[in-house]
Image (cartoon, rainbow, N blue to C red; front, side, top):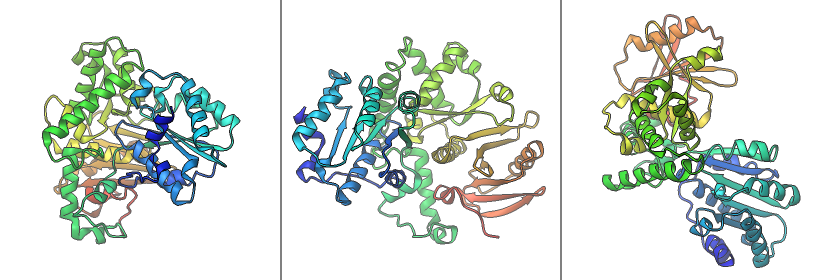
Length: 441
C-alpha cells in the first residue's frame, strides 16, 4: 500500500502536477474549502474530474498547505480490481498516517470512489469521527453521488457536476485565440469568423478534453468509440446487473443516431426489439452515466407531461459522430444539441414545448429563479417568421409574467418585436461565451 501511495502522490516528492486548462467548476468548489462538508464531484468518464482534483491540490499547495497533509488515490488503478473491499480505505488512511504523520487538517482526494464497495458507510464514519479531514470524492455515475449520498450522507455533502469542456474552456486551449477581458458583442465581433470556425469544429469533434487536440480523425473516433463501450460495459452493465447487454447497446447506438429529436418509448422499443418498460429503465441508466439526457414536454400538469413525447440529447458531438450508424448532415441538430449541453451546465430545469395542432416548437424552456427563458435554435442567418411565431404562440397558451425570449442564430445579432413579444437574436459564438446576455436598448 505504501508503494501505491507513493505512486499516486508525486507532490510528496516535490513534483508538479499537470493540471491542464483551469475548469470553471474550480472556483465554486474552492469557496467551500473552509466548510467541513464532503465535496462530491460527479460527471462523465473522461470529462476531466481527475484534472479538477489536481487543480484543487495545486490550489492547496499555493495556499501553503503542506504536501504531507494531502493524500490522493485513484480507484481506477488496477490494484483495486482485486482489492475493492471497504477495508482497503482503512488501510490506505492508516498507511498514509504512518508514512507522513500529518499535523492539522488532512485533505483526502478519492477519485472514482464508486469502485470500492460500501464506500459511503466508510465516509460517513470518517466524517463523524474525524473533524480534521476534508474529503473530496468523484464518481462517473450520477446515481452514486445523489441517491447513495442522500440516503447515507445526508447533510454532510456538497455536490457538483463536471462536464466536458465548455466552449470558453475549449478556446483557452487554442493558440490562435486570445479572448478579450470583457466578453461582449463589440469586443468579440472582430474575431467572429474565428469563433464561428471553432463553433462548427465543436459540431465535429466535441469537447472531451483528451480529444480536442487529436488531429487524426480515425484515432479520435476510435478513442470515442472505446469510451462509449467502456461506459456501457464497465459502468452500466455490471452496476445495474443487466442481463441482456445487447439491448442496452442497441438502445445507446439508436439514441446516438436520433439525437436532438423527439421520441416515445413505444417507438424506441419497436426499433430495438424490446418493450417500453425495459427501454424506460435502460434510458435512465444511460442518463445516470452521463451518456444521454432526456427532457420532458413543458406542462403545468405532471399527468400531461408524462403523456407527451420526450426529447433526447447526447453528451458530446464527437461521441455522437463516432457512434451513430449514419452521419447526419443536419447542422441544425448539432447546433441544438450544443446549446442544450451549454444550458445543462447551468440547470437541470429544462423542458421543451410543442403546439399539438401547428407543430410550432420552443426548443428549450428554462426555469430560473425569477424568470422563464424561452430559447430556440436556428443556426442560419435567414430567419423565418415561423421561428418568431413559436414564441408568441407559447406565451398565448402559457401566460407568464417574467420571461425572456432568445433565438440562437449563426451570425445575426439584433432585437425583433413580433406580435408584441420582444425576441433577442444572438449568434451562437456569443451565446456560448455567456448564456445570460441581454442586448442593449
